[in-house]
Image (cartoon, rainbow, N blue to C red):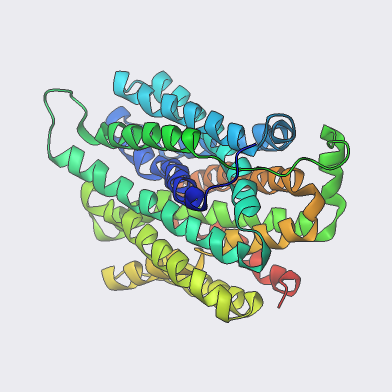
Length: 385
């Protein structure tokens, strides 16, 4: 087998950028809602559907990695993602968007499950959490660029192709193809699996380990707040400030801008500060944000709250994931599958938030996210110093 190239980290970071494509579902669901005249609860089916597939595919992907290897699994995930980006360019009816978002979710489930262990095989050691956080920084670049691309397409009509806001799919499609080809030609040496690979039941039995189970719930809360914020923040601005969708779409970008800053600075802080201390700071910022989103009626207050949750939520995934992954080094593929299954929180939270916001307004959605923040406070003692 070919030796791992020292430059392998570059295409792997580009894969993290492709991982960020999943976050376009927040702003895309708002545009689809407007184009097809959908209610909040129906429009929130789109982000919920994307993350539903994490429940189905994450653990099987961990087992698939044991059979075909991590790199081949990442390549498979990129191919599925490319097809998911191609479909919306053929039309924008409800059925096409459902299939496209489903494929996007399936591809992302495959990618998130396999890419993190692939990186751990290349980097490993005590720098894993900071490296994964840097990967989340690269992912966040794609996340915050999606609303800008959608706004640009919505305001700058492209008559030759009739893409409007859907131009973001074509741009991400090109990057997806490039990433697939680059990773394919990059040599990466993988360590052989020691012993007999785990069965499906044995994978789930790992949830009996307290740190694995609690990290699983932590990731559920992280992604629920993540998807919930980038879906709900524009709606809060529209409800309380009377903004149009194109004006309010900036809220999603603002969230991801501060997530990006958080990931970039977090990759430094996690090297010089204890994981627990930085985790506590992050959760406190998120708690302050929930207060601002719940009662804020001024633009500056709402923008500040969105920025706080963006920064605070930026490193939660990396810390929870690293806690679980390093606790069972011989079962990293299986643990990775279980952790990524926790992204199913991106299905549960938006559905509950949609029903809550239809009932009492967007403050109901904020209350649902607050439950996730409260749980993360309880996770603090599990974070190693």
